Length: 85
Image 1 (cartoon, helix red, strand yellow):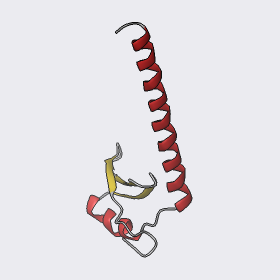
Image 2 (cartoon, rainbow, N blue to C red):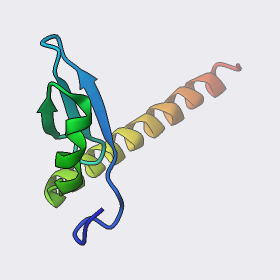
Image 3 (cartoon, rainbow, N blue to C red):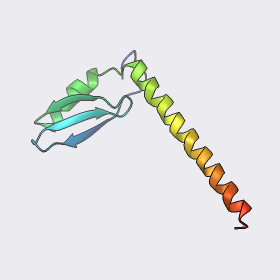
Image 4 (cartoon, rainbow, N blue to C red):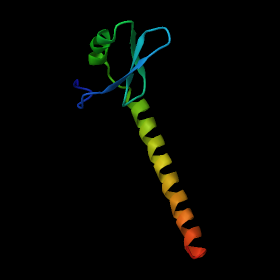
């Protein structure tokens, strides 16, 4: 957490084929650090500040996908209702 990011960020850790670890921010999906030792990732994670335009981009994308799924669900229900199921 920092003054620009009021909520503490959370990170996924991915183990790579070259035996290093990546730290990926759950908010902006950026790889913020890579290290041979997983505990070393935390110091970089603590300094990470998401780019607001990237976070907004993913929010808009998530909403568009959600809206699309809702529309598809409505279409499917309409087809089922017309066929008597």
